[in-house]
Image 1 (cartoon, helix red, strand yellow):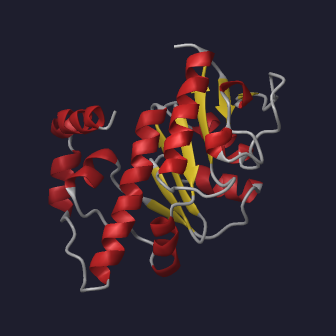
Image 2 (tube, rainbow, N blue to C red; image 1 turned 90 degrees about the horizontal axis):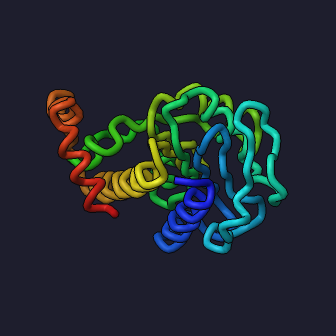
Length: 218
């Protein structure tokens, strides 16, 4: 793996993010960590328009832009603080998925309803609306960054992972979860997994199940 490989992978998942309507226009931002640097989407670009050389290299420790790239995403602090706080994070995906946003308009706690959600994501936490692009939003996200998925009230979703693939597919699963909840809720109160059912799937014995799912999602 090289910095060029990271840039190409970012392009791949940026294009998937747009193709799957998880953002519109120049919304959303992606990043990945590599050897003390993060590579972040530039400001003002639709994600699927970004070329490999346009991902902005930022030194995680200092916050300095260390290449001749463009201006980084306005959510640069959210990404930077997350990498500093949790060394296990290898990538972050911030999107504006429609069902996730709709969910935050009427609910806060997204229940765990099906095995893929339990195995790939686990508990999704919620942050009340904070003005985007501010250090206040970055601080609010970092307070809950031990969780791999964070719903932002009236705003969108943040997911993290050990790599881009994991972070991205968590985005898809949380969006699907919000969609399923809203559809079911329109009919009657959804039946969710019990604590015991969730823990059974999320236990260490279920690691093979999670890996198998990720392999299918390539």
